[in-house]
Length: 339
Image 1: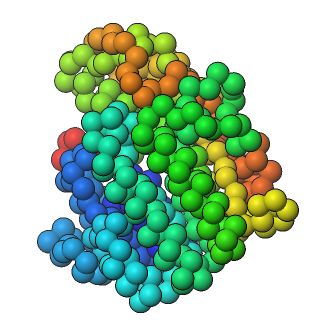
Image 2: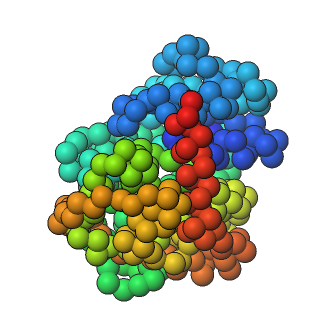
């Protein structure tokens, strides 16, 4: 099967590329390798899949030296002519769209980047799927669409009309856009609301990497809302297992929305932030220096996934416990920082 994966130099995209290649699929990865965080990490991820940095040029396909069924193209999703050519030339069977301008807080500082990537870019993905008869579009949404809801756990049936960050608003917009294309053009689409993904090769702007670096260096970590936060931390391998199963589960059978579906993918066990810090301290054998901060704009107090639908439809529920996931993350982190 030939699959397009956007955001293939990103955290989740990198892991998904490896998994799908190992299962024998033909993969074309695209990513614009922007500098929202250190591009060196993105290039190291690419190198792990056989893509050499000195071969990467905008718009030029690069063949993996490790996987004969993998090619990578540096591309902006908002580049409409390039995206039209990509879909027309490659004739994908399915698309997994993971590329996005990430970060809740950054969306307050740089809103235009979110409209360009998350709205215009997604529009080009939808149009490519529409005109090239894609069998299934799977795309990344986010738990942030639930906003500051005090109704937990968060269910796909809940109303999500009150986003509190532009990032969340763009993800909700993606769901609405996908629904429209599913309805008008019978394009099968599945949105995945990810919950606080962590693990090896994670983003350096997320708590696990920030905390590990600060604790290692003996520097203070910022504890927002004075620690009164909980997150449904979900290990990367569990996320990937869910995504892979969903790719093969094309929407069908819903009378109201026969070509459209949504799933939460989360561990369904919210962890208080202070407990998460304690688990990291235990794993590292070192105490953290805490610096208490007020709640940040755009942040929510709790995330908590109801994964009943995921379990019913694709027969899967994330299983990795926090201590195990943090241990795996720290083994990777320590190994990487020895080199």
